[in-house]
Image (cartoon, rainbow, N blue to C red):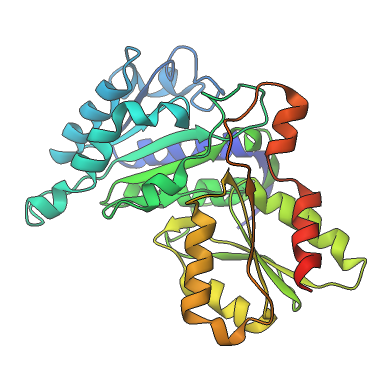
Length: 325
């Protein structure tokens, strides 16, 4: 397939447009997704193309948005709601965690809940403690949910299309600082299966498992470390649940060292789960302690210098690699 460079936001918009054109059951809803085109411009133009029945501006009620979506999914629709910031997910946790995640099980498989919840998350835009968090690990903990966190435009489009077609509830996390990032995206149709990691860079001395925006920080670190003669492999899980354990363990067994880079707070984070998997299943392959690079366990500051201090950067990843090589 021929390819061109588009932004992460454009790739998501293309995925939405293609899936809405393909399946009339797909519709989007959320605060300002219609007339305004979304707070980050992702849904711009879709209202004019598909109309108010399928692009629905909602009241400011996250609870209502997800409650409506779960009900619609239960009767055969494929809603794609947007929650404006990940920090607002606690307002609809009942619908996500106790309803969407469990209804297929509780009804003995008689209904499906094909809902894809799009959620911008992450720091970098100086939006302070209540609009800058990464909360993906919360949902990895819940059986019945799939959790996706793409790091590139290519991954964003292919994974979103696969998520919308999936018969299970998916939480689709989009990092706010990636929306303007450009990258190659094929012009033809393609899907990326959920649960399949990607090797963003091959290496032999250490493995970095990085998620979302931290994939790019890890790649920057790997490029700098290569100048020192240290070969780093960068693994992007892409799907946090289901997790491609085989790809991670295979890389760890090859390099003998593991560093995990994530933007969320360190304690109880996704990185702890990856570290536990490696310790339980590949301890014999490890030649050094596992290192985690994550945000400090504090609310995200509004002050730009303080926010930059709290969030992991290339320097901290490099220091972690050096400490084990």
